[in-house]
Amino acid sequence: MEISDELRSFEATGVYRLNVTGTSTGAAFLDPVRLLNGSYQRFRIIPSAYYSRSFEPPRQVGDPETEPPEKRRKRKRNQKPKPRGLNAMERIAEARHQEARPLLLSAHESLIKDKYLREHISKMIEGKEHKLDVGSGFENNFVELGTSWRAPFYEITICFRKPHVLGNGEGSFNAQKTSFLIISVEAIDEAEGDFQNRHYILPRGSCFLMSDFKRVRDLIPGSSNQGYNLIVVDPPLENGCVRQKEALCCRYPTLPNKYLLYLPVQELAHPAGALLVLWITNREKLRMFVEKELLPSWGVKDPTVFYWLKVKHDGSLIGDLDLFHHRPYECLLIGYINVNTDAKQGSNFKLLEGTQVIMSVPGAHSRKPPLEKLLSEYIPGPKPPRCIELFARELFPGWTSWGNEPLHFQDSMYFSEK
Ligand code: SAM
Image (tube, rainbow, N blue to C red; front, side, top):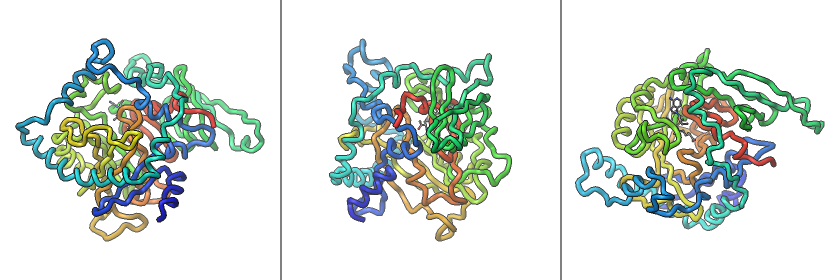
């Protein structure tokens, strides 16, 4: 494909595939704002609100007045040279890193060499339209709301455009009051919702359930044919610095790894097959638990590793690739449920072929790029696929989003009207 074709396809899809010379690794650059904008007709995501971290004022490094204590602790830890004597777990982690390193470097080099793409990345975050209240604490704190014993159910008012209104220009809206259970948005375009004095934009065809982990089994479909073909799990994992008491620095509470064994992933999977994507951190103890216990308990064999390599808007990596405790990449383990992976190919989908490197400019803390477009050819079962995200913070058309704050990034402050 000519570079211009690839760019044209990027304009339309938000996915830019790169050729990585000398390896069989696939690489792609994702523009999450472009991908997300495909879900809306009347609104668009404000790039500077999505990339809010790129707009944070530079902090005075080391200044106790301006640098929060958790940042200071993290900075000191990250500045430490690589430990001289690695323990057994760290040696395995280091070996994994050394194995991934050439792939990551080649993928990044292919991005750097592509001047068209680099130009696009630098323009992605242009604009002075950043709304000051992003991350300022004005948003609803869903996690806190969910812990109130006084109000097991909250009320959301949803306005949606009736089908017959389309085309006659009147733009009248119908308001519906409903309690907070599984809500499915079946309007002709995005719906709007009011909740606890904040306004939310809900994409058409999205569905959400806001509840605590204890109620996760409420998601299991009544009939197995309503199971899901793409299951993305992005758990609130503990890591060295993120423990319950320090949860504030990460803006959400974490769950012990063992709890993940209680996620009803097999009961959510479609009988005709499901692609399972699990986001993990680079901690070796977690990786071992996931490979030896968690994935086998979900019926996933031989997962494929994808990497998410984070770049800045000048194309450079967000940090030193070799910094031991703070790699500029995260891993996704991807595998199949209810699919015979020994067969050469799936009936109406491609089997995963090997490691891929996904690159993008990260948004808010822990926000992951949308994956459906990139993975669509690998999803088994009926089309369009039924998709679900566990521990979600946003909504997508055709997806069910579950977690204790699935509306977080649907706050209208992230959007402007077209
Ligand atoms: N995938 C999300 C994104 O791209 O923005 C990030 C998910 S984040 C890693 C984990 C999420 O799990 C947070 O929204 C957190 O509030 C939620 N969470 C933490 N404890 C939970 C619990 N007990 N029940 C349900 N959700 C929980």
